[in-house]
Image 1 (spheres, rainbow, N blue to C red):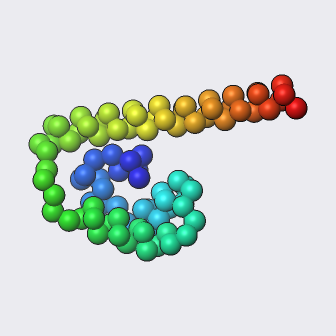
Image 2: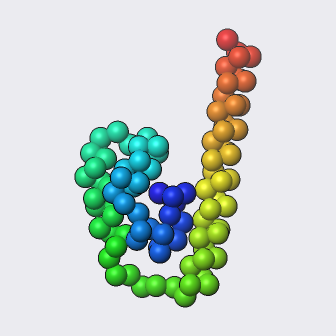
Length: 88
């Protein structure tokens, strides 16, 4: 979800289908539509808002962290494969 909508403003704009697709890409298999409805409702409620400058900065930080986590997952998978090849 954070990769799709790193800021509250972007989160409010998400459709149920985009939320559902993000959940499926993240590995969720059951009750995706129900969960997407719940998430969409939560994202569209009134919340305390940070100034736009702060929200944008935090969004940029979130995008960078999502990229780091994604690369770490790629490297972990590569390491697992290398270890499996050497110990089989």
